Length: 438
Ligand code: COA
Image (tube, rainbow, N blue to C red):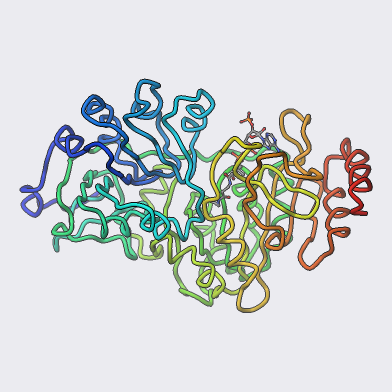
C-alpha cells in the first residue's frame, strides 16, 4: 500500500519482536488481533518465552496459522489459546488433546464486556498501518474487539505493517495511545475466492429468491454465502451491514448492484467490523471512505442491525432439528468454530424496524458423502445451539426453502423434511411420527 511514512512520529516507540514477547509474564491475559489483523511476527515468536512463563491465556478469533505456542503439546501449562471462534489448527489441536486450546462461549457483540467482567486484559498485540501525517495509525482490517481492548489493556503493542490498507470509520488510534510498535511488513493473511460448486449455486439461487431489491444484507463466510452473493447480480440498490466484509461485496458494488443508497441506517456506506479476502480487496479498501469500519459491539448490536430496512442475514450451519434449533458451531460436543455473529445478525434482521427483515440459515442437505442428514429430528447430543428456534425464519438447502417463522412445530417439521435429501425423507417422517410432531 502507498503510505506517506514519517518515522519521527513513532521512532522512539519502536521495539524488536523479541522485546515485545519478553513483556509476557505468567498468568497474563493477552488479546491478539483477529484474522487478517493477526500480529504474525509476534505470534510466530510467542513460544520463545515458554520456559519463563506459565498459564498465559491468548484470546483470539479464528487463528489462521499453526503457531507453535498452541499447536505443540509441550506448550501445555505455559500457553492456552482461549478462542472466541476456532480455526482449523485450533480444531486439530483440540482433536489431538494437546491441552493448549479452549473455547469461550460468546456472541460477537458482547465478547468484550463478557471478557472484561471475567478478566483484566494485560497486553493487546495488534496490527496497524504507519501513522498518517497527523500521527494517527489505522487499525486497518478490523476493530471487532481490538480497539475496545486497547482502551482497557495495561500495554498496547502494535505491529506496523506497510502492507495493510488505511481504512476509515473508528479504526484510527493516535501514536500517543500506543505503548510500543514493532515493525513487521509481513504478508497480510488472505482468504481466496472459491468458485461455488453446483449445490452451493442452487442454494445461492434459492437464497436470492428471498432477497428483495433495496434490501440490506449480511453475509456469513464460506462457499454458500459466496454463492448467494453471486446469485444477487440482478438485484437493485442493495446495501450492506455485516460483521465480515468479503470480496463478493466489493464485486457487487463495482457492478452497481450494491449501492448502499437506499439504506435506512448509515445510508451511502458499507458498515462492517472486519474484512478478510484477497489482496485485491485489501487494495480496494485502502483509503476507501465508502466503507465504515466500526467496533463489533456496535455493528453487531441487534438493535443497530434492526435499524436497517429489509435487513436480511444469511448464515450457514451444520445441523437443524425439526423445531428449527440451529447448530452451526459444534459437531456433537466437539467445538468446530464459534457462534460468532450468527445469533446477533439473525435477531437483528428478524426484528427489523420495518417488519420486513429475514433471518436465513443455509446448509447442504447432507454431510460426509451423503451419509448424514443435516436436517435431523434432534441435534446430536452435546451440540451447541447457535440459534434459538424462534430466531430461525428460513432454512435453505439445495432442495428448496423451508419457511419457519410463525409456524408450529408440526408445520416446521413437515417443511424441513420437504427440503431434506430425498434418501432421508421417509426415515425422518417416521421419526417425526414417533416424536408425536406430525
Ligand atoms: N454432522 C457431522 N459433520 C458435519 C455436519 C453434520 N451435521 N455438517 C457438516 N459436517 C462436516 C462437513 O462434512 C465438513 O467436514 P470436512 O471438513 O471433513 O469436509 C465440516 O463439517 C465443515 O462443513 P462445511 O459445511 O464445509 O462448513 P463451512 O466451512 O461451510 O462452515 C459453518 C460452516 C457453519 C461451520 C460456519 O459457517 C460457522 O462456523 N458458522 C457459525 C458462525 C457464523 O455463522 N458467523 C456469522 C458470519 S461471520
